[in-house]
Length: 135
Ligand SMILES: Cc1cc2nc3c(=O)[nH]c(=O)nc-3n(C[C@H](O)[C@H](O)[C@H](O)COP(=O)(O)OP(=O)(O)OC[C@H]3O[C@@H](n4cnc5c(N)ncnc54)[C@H](O)[C@@H]3O)c2cc1C
Image (cartoon, rainbow, N blue to C red; front, top):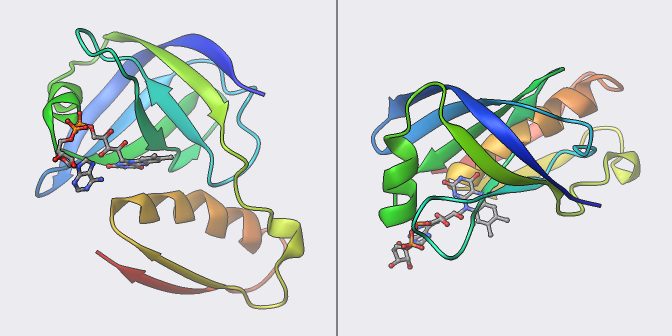
């Protein structure tokens, strides 16, 4: 199930070469599983841009994105207080109930950010997960 909501940009800062962290404030009730993504409407672009959810709390979502084209370039210039139209609760996400004692997570690129929340949810039940990431 997904839902369309307005979110407010709370911060948008560069954390590495071409890579940004954005914190969005708004409804999180449709976010249920690590691995899900949001779809952001960007002014003057017909298609929304999908970005994975890195982590979230009671009223904010954190995303990590890389500037690769015009849409993400616009995103990187958004200031605190900007209102964005976003589809939330998208994607099936990872089913953590099926993982065994010590899961191995393999990933590449900026979408590895989604593992932050994934590892947090695994750690609630287990001691450790092995991560293998390439950027
Ligand atoms: C489910 C899903 C989740 C995603 N999660 C994230 C995320 O958490 N963080 C993130 O940074 N990106 C993520 N992406 C990729 C992100 O959606 C695209 O990078 C973004 O839509 C590009 O928009 P743009 O307008 O900047 O570039 P476009 O104008 O669409 O593309 C510009 C140029 O960059 C190339 N390009 C597009 N995407 C990439 C890419 N990812 N890597 C290298 N070259 C590319 C295109 O082929 C094109 O040549 C995700 C994509 C999907 C489908």
